[in-house]
Amino acid sequence: MNERFIPIGDKVLVQPAEAETTTSGGIVLPDSAQKQLAKGTVLAVGPGRTTRDGELVVPQVKAGDVVYYGDFAATQITINAEPLAVIVDNDILGTVVTVGAGN
Image (cartoon, rainbow, N blue to C red; front, side, top):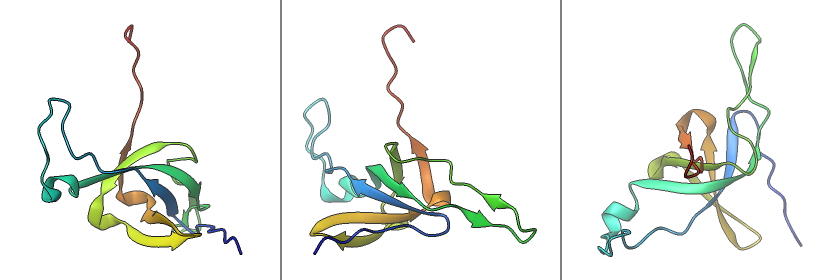
């Protein structure tokens, strides 16, 4: 049976990217360096959190965004034998933007 995970509140579901084991210059990274920051693709986003005043604060990311987050910020889960991460929107450090040669 296939399961589907739907984030609630300000939670974001991310498919983690494979950890890079070497730098672009060919230097092999130790395990400790590989785990400091994590990168992944946003699969689903909850509706947001509600403030004390009743305002809805919508997450700043959307499905398809590539994001960086601290490794310890994520709760690891497995859905349909696929390792995934659930992260609070505030714990996402930023998105990855591809910049062309003319930018």
